[in-house]
Length: 155
Image 1 (cartoon, rainbow, N blue to C red):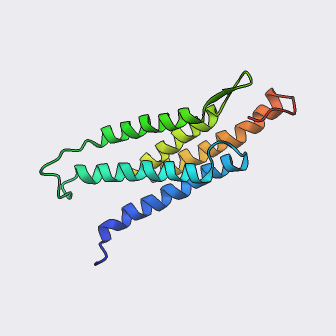
Image 2 (cartoon, rainbow, N blue to C red; image 1 turned 135 degrees about the horizontal axis):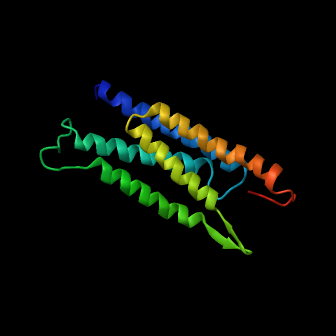
């Protein structure tokens, strides 16, 4: 098989998505949450790959373009809806508290990062990843110091 330069950008997109998803997942892993490093990496990677494939299939480069019309917006919409089902699986009601809501929201945000990478919005995807990590880690400190004064707060 001959190396095809057109495959280089999607290859790098998948690597970037996996890396950024893992950064977000590290924070969840550190806090020993329901979903961690592997889950967040795979969510970002999967969202990116679905987006890249949808864009490719909708382009004139696709050998199927004469027979099949693919709307990338519908694929992106399906990813957003699909990740909501995964997110709902980590939300539980336990001891009069709702747990996993922040992890579910972080999974949803991570899927959006993957989609952003898939459509080529690299700097926005990096910014969204950093903001997600800031919200998860930084806002936790604000909650612990300013709002919740008890030692048992887990966030």
